Length: 140
Image (cartoon, rainbow, N blue to C red; front, side, top):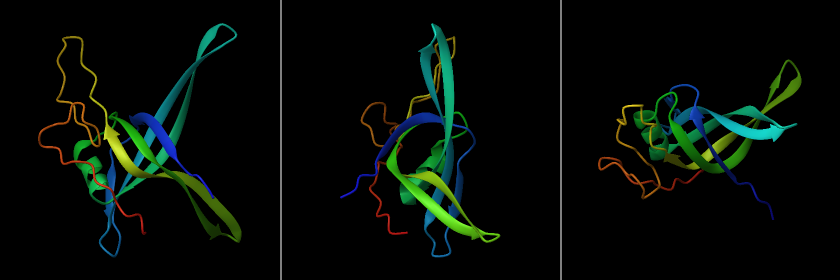
């Protein structure tokens, strides 16, 4: 038995990048920043971690269509390790392979105005023109 599950909330550090495999499958690359605030020796400390995320199929296409740098998201997925050889040495990296992405409402400005919240995979604040979340078979 094994368990590999990740849930993380953060903001995009760059615009999504949509690509297609030679077989025609779509994959969207995201990079998110996750902030952790804690108290150390009576002072608030902020720790920022950065994560690469890959999102396949229709969900990835929706990410590319509706998200931009700074957008808030919640990612549900699993960790995936890639390994390769370079100059005779084994290299590796770990990224998140998303099963689902929830789009968070944009922050409102001081005047109380803001854009329509968009959500993927949640009932709260779903935009009327937003397609529903879909499950994707992860047979890469």
